[in-house]
Image (cartoon, rainbow, N blue to C red; front, side, top):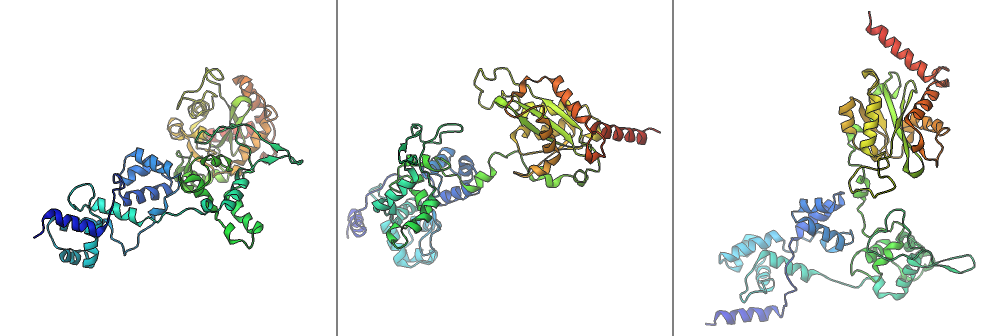
Length: 463
């Protein structure tokens, strides 16, 4: 009878020389699939990692190493391959000393499949052929990989064509090359209001479709725009240098999922505060007390807030003072906006202004989707005014306010410093507008229209 060591050596000889490729990954395949599905739904890397059941730093590392693009090996596996659940059942039965045929009947696979699985995907870190489901799954995934060179890496002519249109120099009409500003690659986007690299900067879609015109009969020059994106964003995927990302129109160092772009920056919005939920009485302007608001901006991020009543066109202006330290010190992270028109400053200004009105004139306020109104929930609690938001890029939904802003530009032209005007100055301008006769009011002024409404309300209340 052969010894245990001889049996192990015989099995090893049948499966061939197999070096361990390293430590098995922390997460399993189904966790990585769940992570990228969550990313596609618009979640952040940390939130997607929590949903997948892995530590947040691992999720961030996955996203950055993949360039924001799901790895190709995460595609669903065919049913002809053993799954992790089947391997766990095999490991459990094998640990209970069940034979190959008994395991095959329990799993529903052929005996040859079970025998080959136990022989080929056993652990390689111990002297014994211990079978573990996680290690076996790891071996199977590594063996199933079919790495190949990308088309850009194999075709130098195609690579030069793509790179020239992506990062080629720009030139004057006489052919002289214009270098543009010198920019060092920092591994991420340069940031807002920063110089960027000057290049021909064709988008991958433009490159892929223009190729059909330049080489209509050359099959070797075919490439899709997705392959170009992968060559740029996925590490080790293609022959294009990572810093060429700076030549893309967006300049993003990581590819951002579409769902995340659509949801970014508007976390304070919910379906309940959109303009479609605004009362019908506000739409037909039948009842006073429904307001529209906005900011008009000037030089140096100075601003003035505007409030216009929809029915009477009565206007009130918000005096937004710059905070101490503006232009002298750097704003602290997550601190208040030193320009004076941050969310907290705008909320306080509206509260102090609109609180002077009777309760029946504080029904609703419609604003655009600016971040200065992110504290609308607290504003509603403090004043009793329900706040609604317009749809994106729909200024006509606040047409009264937009018209009033145009009238105010006579007093506060664009490109001027609005912070030099005092609160008394704003009150004088608002009074001037409220005394102007309006055609839509039958040539009455907004002040007269509001006075008539207040008088009629008092007559109804008083006996």
